Image 1 (cartoon, rainbow, N blue to C red):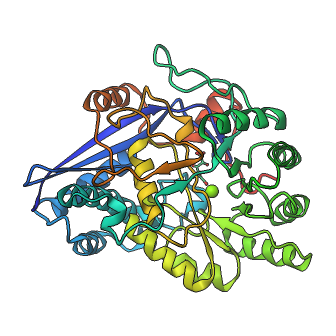
Image 2: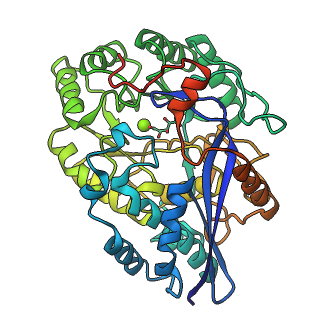
Length: 438
Ligand code: GKR
Ligand code: MG
């Protein structure tokens, strides 16, 4: 079996005006759907970051994919790494800290490879009649837990003009509204862990939000807060101190400030006060090269994996092994996505024993109108996604929906995520992402 065709579909999906330290989400998020067709007529699929950059990288990788045996993944990775310019040269000093997810030049080839690996594994699963998680060594769980991923947001459900979505959650810009958002989300999906995206409002308001969530949902529901580096070391320590109780018992503090040195200092000062809240990261730790240093400095105790940029489900497993050896915890990061990504995340998590926290997912923020999975939205019930008894990822594409996603993409003017531009357009004409903000 060989790969005889690569099809790339740039799509746009409606996205509500969610806030983070990066700014405000645009009315449409960009994704790319990948199809690999084999000489046996089987199609493997994947979903990844969208816009011009990821699309060009996938186009450039296509000659390495055509004619290749989809089982020979190590060879494909080596071929792509061989063509990648040296990390530091490409990055020119830029790191994930100062860029929106999906734009980190240090991980570009891993992101490209990840999409191809997921599609190859889907193809292999379909060829041998096994679910993807069982192709990569086998599942350790049949269902994967996800957390309620709360965002402060402006009014609006995403989209523009005659292509708008219903505003399910309304405006959420204080503690009370965040509790309402969470109740709604839990009622619909049954999540049992909660993540609040912070770094948006004054830290006192975000502390009050976490306290209100604890009061409403109780200690059995672990809480985490992620301001994406918006706080100084001083503020991070103050928030860690204030939320000592609320973030204990399975919760964590995620990327409170920038860089490993800052995180190490926050950890040291909290520990000195007897506070053991673990620090998690998907900003200071984005690849294998970051893990030993994060561990050595005790800067990060929980690494956030993500098959989309760590290099696919097999690298997530390798990361799990490394975290296990180092005694670090592991959770999973997400970005705005549809059902194909949700299933890739679910299979990767199912086959990774070290992943013991509920994974993040933006899935509740997207709607059936944008879903490209045949049969519609992937069910999340009781806070979990079950591995279906189907080969590969367990999803097929709905080609009419895919065509609608492509039409939307063709209509909108932007080709990369720019949350700062959205802030300037709708909130403050002078807004810039400043780290630390508080
Ligand atoms: O969707 O605005 C967002 C998030 O801030 C996302 O881009 C982050 O990558 O979820 C992410 C995180 O945990 O940092
Ligand atoms: Mg994060």
